Image 1 (cartoon, rainbow, N blue to C red):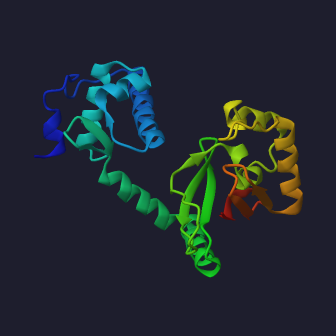
Image 2 (image 1 turned 180 degrees about the horizontal axis):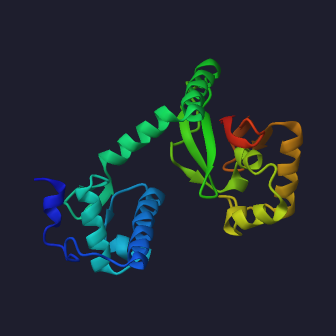
Length: 239
């Protein structure tokens, strides 16, 4: 049975019905919210939980999910009542990787770095104001830190975060960092002034080293990847 057939009993909104521009814009925003929610949770989500998490009407959520499943952007998982990303999004991602020189070359360099050092190596970028692991290559040592592509981590927890924010003024940095972001997993708090000082120091030295932030055994060395105009577009790091 095709995934879309599982949805035929769901409430709908009249096929082919023309919606006002404002309604279409609102619908698009809800689609983006669905995708962002799934990405943040990193697992298949029940439709009811999805509607509740987005604070959206259940009937509207059912309708949007059905349309996304029919388009191949989402797929039903498990018993057919949970939904997750579809194969078409994977194909879009592969096309993006082939067309993005920074990502393509960055992946190659990260794999080489991991192979030559035996350490876990990562390519990281800013995505929606968050530190995001774009590509990760595991180390070969018996003790190594595990990391997952797509994982988003608060900027103050990372060496890369200090480099990715280099060049931004204080007001923009403060707008991107919440109070919760400044609290480390063990409960310690990083003062915003100290974090901004670290960013300035990383900009001057051209690299950043952090130790014991995420856990007591983790040390990270990060270096910036610059665009032609001199902006930090990404980082490469050893963990």
